Structures are given as structure tokens and as C-alpha cells.
Length: 181
Image 1 (cartoon, one colour):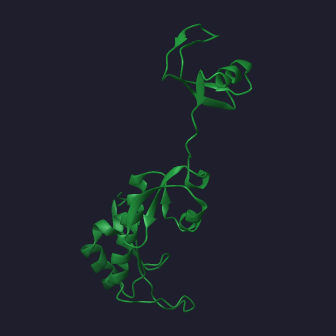
Image 2: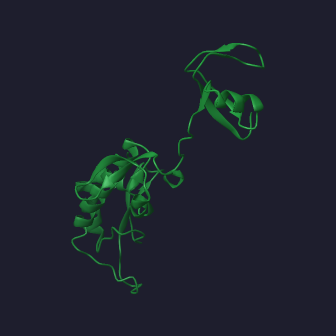
Image 3: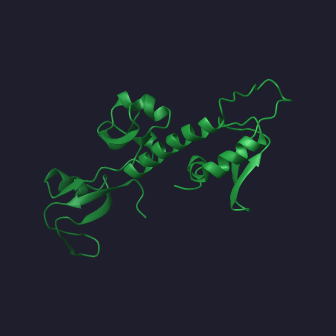
């Protein structure tokens, strides 16, 4: 494995040095930029560097393509990364692919649906005696389960309300909890 290697695309036919063979235009290979041969091929226009794609949204650089959730009407939009999108990235509204961005939109819609099931219940976090119910996915049971302790923002005042929410919106719960994508 070549360390500090970059990917290159062949623009004009060239002969490789190791294991001699001809590389045709369009073929790709990895090499280090410290190699004098690679520098010469770059300089004379025989190859071009293939820009490395970002692995996470935190790796985005100016001009990289990404997807942003349009918060005015909840749909995904393809954009070129610009620092003006940083606030959206910080709150999880930027993705590398359209599919991932659509998952974010689905989760936001599911969350709002589930919040409406809480009937406006606002837990008093300072009152340890107040019952607060939430829903989680139990892998061993392969299903949604009500828990007496609330960990998220979707909390219910009663076991009945939480159970009714599961019955009314099982798909939304699975999307919200990341079980179903």
C-alpha cells in the first residue's frame, strides 16, 4: 500500500515504470506526489490529480458538492460547499449525498409527527418524581418499547399516550430512532 498516495487520471497514453504496461486515457492509478516521474507527468499534462472526496460533512472544502436541507419547505438541495452553510452543518442539516439528506428530512418530519402525539406535554426536568415516558427500539424484541425514563425530546405524560403513539405511527418511530431508513 502506498502511503500519502493520491489518485491520478491518465489524460494521454503513458508507459508505467514498474511492471511495464501502457495506461490509456481515462484509467486511474495511485502514486505519491514526491515521485519525480509523477511531478513530470503532471507538469506536461499527461495526468491530472483526482480530487479526494470528503468522507464526512466536516471534511467539506470550498466548492465541494453536498446536499443541504432547505428549512423553508423541508426538501434537499444540491449546492457547492460554502462557509455560509456552516450553521446548517453544525445542526445536522448538511449531507454528502441526496439519499442521506432525504433521511434527515424524513427524520425531521417524523419528529414533528411524534411531538404532536405528546399533546404538548413539557416535562419538568427538575421534578424527579414526575413520570416521563419515551419510546425506544429493542433489538432483542425486534420492536418498539415504552420506557419509564425519557432521554430525548419526545416525552409522554402517560404510558397510554406513548403506547397510542407507537400504534398510530410505528414507521415514524422507526425513522426517528434510526431503525428504518
